[in-house]
Length: 102
Image (cartoon, rainbow, N blue to C red; front, side, top):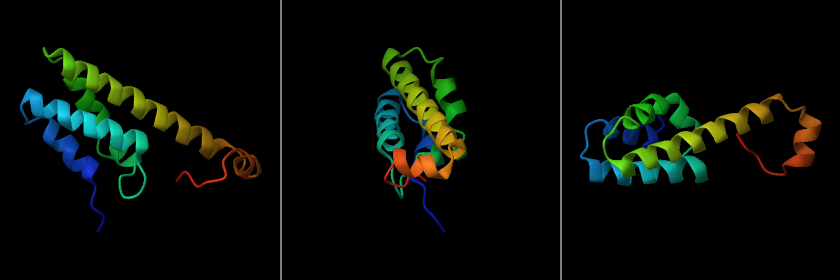
């Protein structure tokens, strides 16, 4: 059984105070942006993080909105990056990226 820190943090977002939400969002941002196993950025997509981030954009606290929008941007970037590399032919993928993405 795999443990996903990202899924746990996404679930905590809805119930925590605003100051704690900011720390959670900062952690999620870095996990998604720099994520490698076991902090796989695709876990954020699987755990429905985008809808949680969208809900936080309605917050009255500016810092929560800023970090939620940063998380949305980095999640969208990772999603597009993965989709581009999945569509790229294998021979080009080896030439462009010498390391494994997924």
